[in-house]
Image 1 (spheres, one colour):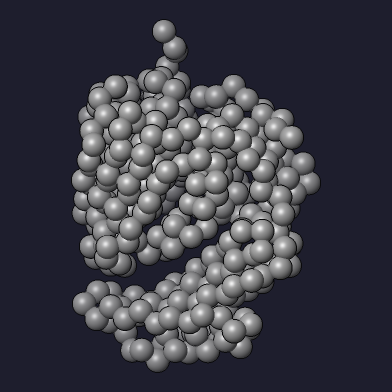
Image 2 (tube, helix red, strand yellow):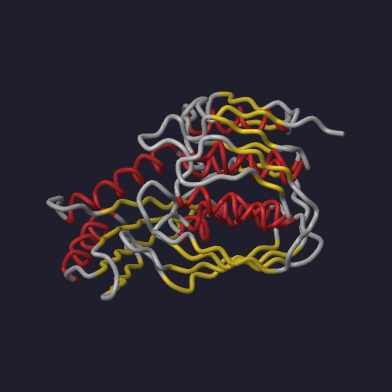
Length: 337
């Protein structure tokens, strides 16, 4: 019998990533999770609605037994089961991030003995979380290269403050294999998207004008959501000849010029390109778990791992006995060459 894993949610950056990684690995390893001080490092500690949705989705995915939890709960006991439904429907009930729910259940769903379809309702493009586009166009290509059979479909965009977006995740049984992501290369495609929800179109047009000035012939798109919001966000992305991608996002706020919103994301993208690496800061954090589950891997990223990433490494190593080291600009998992 494998021993339970005790996780202190106040460690490191003290946020929700510790919970999501722990839930995924509890299912994948079949080990009971005992977690305390959940999100102790946040202004509103404990489980919030989107975190409860992660717990619910993880429990439904495997038929887990879960201690009684509610908004604000800081303690959790999660005992994974062996029942795998073919379909899940999770409604966050707020603009909480659908992509973070997907991050929780995606890798375990690949281990199911049959295809899994999950419909998640909530926010798809909200601050402090990766937007759907990042998950779909930056993260998933690498996961598929590792052997994952997964498709994401954005059926409806959901933004602050109400959410109401809908994402469908479909997986087939897959085994991940180690991989190396070390080459960058020149930029072969550029893209900029501005979303305005119940706001004037000229805001989006001004943001895209900044992209056209700073990027070389980007593909530009305005998305108007007249029945949502009010909210504005701007996304800019690049594809490199190696197949690597990066997408940077910024969100508008009252009194902040549209040009500054665009420049925030464009500056971040420029820093990434100047570094000459294939993996950006946020992708580095997200690649750690699938590579660890695959048994190894390596990738080049920006110098200096974020606290978010180093905390994620500590959480992974609480479940899996494998070395993860950072040499210069390269993360190496299980000494994979």
